[in-house]
Image (cartoon, rainbow, N blue to C red):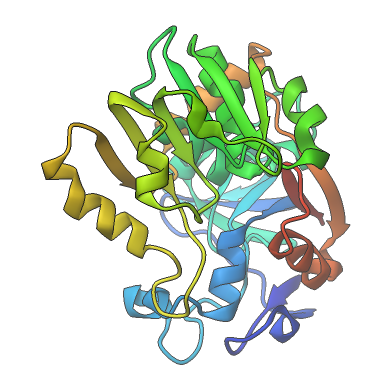
Length: 317
């Protein structure tokens, strides 16, 4: 089969489009014929091996342990392993796995869900990682609370705006000038262009920061006295990659009335089902920025890394 493969860490140019052996499903696995695969910043980090903390966490010190890149996917079940009961060959599914940038990929049965009928494969391929992250970040949202989403036009942010509205919150979305119209279509009650306005003039019950740049001091100014800050991801630095903000939040949290959290999200089967149901109900729609052929994965990663994407970038297979 064709796949996007890397033998060493480096810029996206280390990725190669070449033939590799087709994987086989083990017990509890499903083999999926991939129709589309999502591209997100996490793939860029795994490609470059930065921050170096990733290598220490088991992804491979000198070279990637798993050579085929990609996490999110949507496709058709080709074959099932022993013990699989929820999937059958021919089922249309979406989910996450290691090695989604390929014509075929193996996923655990509990990390796939039925593809919503109202979505194309391209739309469904961008749901799992970003959608689960947004859902987990908004776990404590209650109706009529004020929620601020920073980075509202990004992969996680575009899901978060819609989910917060679904949960009954009053949503303020922060984005750049070029993306304000898009964010309004997601249902945000208020849109702040960060190049022209300061969002700290109001206070919020929950702030979800997906941008990874602002200081804790700056963000806390926009929280209600007992408000919650959720930090998702972060950029900056070869060693920690911005995760130092999460460490600072954890150290400060016991001494302040605010709840300061760093989210380390994981895709869970139960969350995929919640997302599927919400999508089927018409309350959530993935935002698709653009698609690239699988062979153009390097260009797709470059587009995501440059910060140009509004919503999700997807590879078609």
